Length: 321
Image (tube, rainbow, N blue to C red):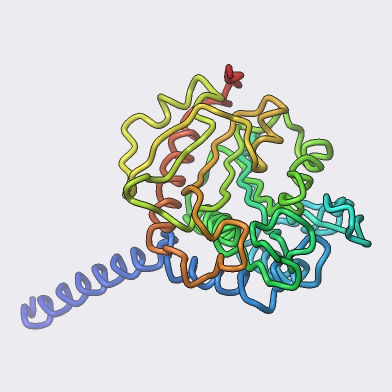
C-alpha cells in the first residue's frame, strides 16, 4: 500500500463530501429577504399604477405572478391557463367603468394526494385612487402602490410556492396557490373562487391567507387569525419555535379573503402584521417593508403548514361571536 497516495485520496474525498453538503444547504429553499424585497419592489413600483382592478398595472402584476408560478413548476389551474376570469364591480358609483374584467391567478402543486392546502393573497390594490377606499383626503390621480397591502402578501405567496416546489420532500397534501383579484372591492375574487372552485371544497385541508405581512412590529408581533376554526389548531401550534413574536385570534371571518373560505366551513389561518398610518394611502411604499422580518414570518408559516400536514384532514369549527 502506498500510504502517500492513500491519505490524500481519502482527504480529498472527505473534502468534496463536505463541500457538497455545504452547497446543498446553501441552495435549500429557505425564505429569503432579498427575494421578498425584490417581489415587493416590482409589484409596488410606480409603473404598476397601484394595481387597480381591471387596470393595465394589475395585468402586469398578473403576468409577473404567472411567470413565477411557471418557474416553480406549478401547473396552470385556471379556466384560461393560470387565469380564472370574472367580472368585478367597482363600489364607487361615480366611476364610469364600474364593471371591470378581473382574474384570479391559480397554480397547482400536485403531490398526488387526496386533499389540498390553499395558500392565498390578494394582488390588487387601489390604483390611482378612483375606485374608493383610499384614506387620502384627495386621492384621485395619486398612485397607491400598496407595498404592504398587499405586495407583501403576494411575496409571501411566491416564497411559499418556491419553498414547497423545491424542497425535495414528498408532502402528503397538494397545494393550490391563488393570487386573488378585486379583494379591495369586497373580497370579490375569493368569493368568486369559492363559488367556482377548481378543486371540490370538500377536499380542502385548510386555507392560509396573507394580507399585510410586511410591517412587523416586535412589540405587537404577527397576528394569526383563524385559530378557532378547527379543534386541531392548538395541537398543530404546540411546540412551534418561531423567529418572530406571534399571537393567535380565534376569528375566522374578517376583512380579507380567508373570510370567503370560512363562510364555506373551511378551516382558515390569517397572517397580518397590523395597521399603520400608510394603510390605504399613497405612502404605502416598498422602502418601508421589513423584508427580514417577513422572511421569518414565512418561516413560521412553513412550520405550521408542516405540522398541519402530519394531521388528517382538519375538521371545521364555527367560531362563536
